[in-house]
Every structure is written in C-alpha cells, then in structure tokens.
Length: 313
Image (cartoon, rainbow, N blue to C red):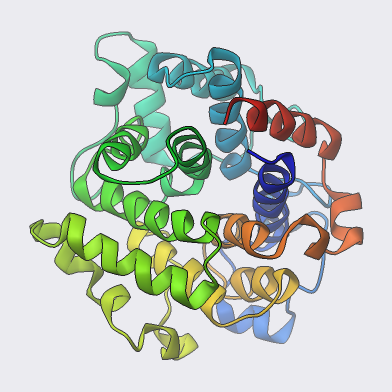
C-alpha cells in the first residue's frame, strides 16, 4: 500500500485525537462559547499540546504487530495492548493517561492467559463503548491492502479484531460498517458514494442480524441532514460511528472535519480520531494544517510506524 495513504490515515487519526484530548467530557454548549480552533495544552487531562491518547496508542500497537509479524496474530496484538497498559509503551509522552473500563477489563483478562485473545472482550450489551471502533482502521487497511476487498471473510476478521476488547454484536457490526465505508474510500469513491455503497453493503451482510436494527439511522437516506442536536457523542459505539460519519458527510476538508468532530463535545478524542482517520484517507496528509502536525507528539515515530505498516499491506 502507498506509504502516503497510511501516513494520511495515521496522522489524520492522531491529530484528531490530540485536538480532542484537552476538551474530553466538555459539554457542547461550553465548546460553542470557547470552540477548539487548534492544538491546546492542558485541559481535561493536563497534557501538553499535541498529546494523543489511547485511541492512537491502540491503533499504533495494532500496526506494530501487523508490521512485525507480517500476518494477523491476535495473541501478539493483545500482548501489545498489555504492553501499552502495563508498561506505558506506544504512548505520546511515556505516560498512559486514558483507558476505557471495558478495554481495561479485557486486557487484564488476557494477561491471565485463561482465554484465547478473541474471547477476552466483553460480550454483554452494556459493554458497547467505542474502544474497538477507535483502533480498527489498521485492520481495515491491512485486509484491504492484502486481499483487495472487504467482504464476508474480511468482516469476520474485523469482528475478531473488535472482540479483543469488545465482543458484543453491536460493537462488531459498528466496526464492520466502518470497514465497508472505508473500503469504498480506499477504492476511490467520493464521500457521499462511499457512504451510500458502504451502507448498502452493510444491509447485505447484516440485514438478517437482529442487532442491525439499531443502525437504522445510518441506513436512512436523509442521515446526513440530521441536525447537530440529534448527533450524540456520549461514548456509545453507534453514537460515535454516527457522529464521525455525520461530520465526514457535512464537511469538505480535513480541518473543518476535525474541528466539527471535537466541538461536538463529549468523547471528543475518540470522535476526533475516528473522523480524523477517515479525513486523512479522503483529503490526504497535505490537507492537515502544518501547525497541527508540527505540534503533534512523536510525529517522526508515527511516520516510521506508518511506513513499516505500508510495506506489509
């Protein structure tokens, strides 16, 4: 896969993540009064400007395993997640400061070596946060790059990637929908067509699954016309997927996309990361404001991770 594509994805994701870190958990009304316009320091997590969070850390941990192993090794990916959790590897500053409860429980469960890696994710309905969706892009790029498509067999692997931490059908389908839309972007479709075709494919693959009914808003042809007040960013995986896609459909460049995503408030780093990764793929790394890239922590290292990953796709 072209190195530029992978760099665009990873830097787009990391920048969106870093823009959202200082304002995570802030209300939308607060951000309307003092909107994010660029990289900020401190804020919610008291981190330097350009610091990215667990979204990028787990994305990079996945990429490093796929690059080094040159295959899908779920045990190795889970081991990287544990190294991040326990040893603070794959972090922006050498310190891990953010982790979701479901992810933590799954990583700890893996560390006890009592279950296979893809059986460690929580499978109850209340464990449908966005912790697998935020790190799924490398799996999509790897499978698309090595197989040239995202179809039934690839979706099964996407579901297994999700199940490392989030094993409920809603989380798996969310990752699958994101994969189907992303595959259309990688195929060269414009945003509107990628969304339309991706959701049509989702109906084909998931239409008989009872849990697919929860994605009804995404299948509505008027989804992009939703009012901002109807878009939630509370951390539920379907809400996060909707918010990221809604931002993509309602902007025309990376900067506008990333700022719209984080200024929705709530789980700002994750919505920013998920939207930003897609924005990088659509608009390219050159579309990301230079001052944001200059502020981004460990940019050179992220670019090296992206280059190594591109070589195996």
